[in-house]
Length: 126
Image (tube, rainbow, N blue to C red; front, side, top):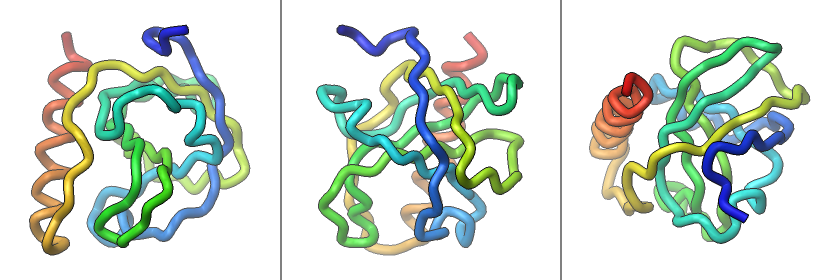
């Protein structure tokens, strides 16, 4: 079954808080296996939190910057800063932006995050 345009549900869990230190706090989700079969990388996405619709950039894959090998699922939600650990959220995976990349430092990683978010916003405005 294609995941395009269907809403998936997962619970928000605590992560490593690296995104927060870079100015990109993410919602880490407890069920990365929901995207098994999709390409690892960054996607534009929509998200429903407490009945309200948001846009964001979704990452599915290993956090190479932290030398991790297991896939994670996290979303940087535009214009959202609340801590909602334990809450169930719905999300919709949209267009693929880029594959997983390895970065030599946090500065290059942050620049890539800025670019990913610009692309996601452009996709979501269409």
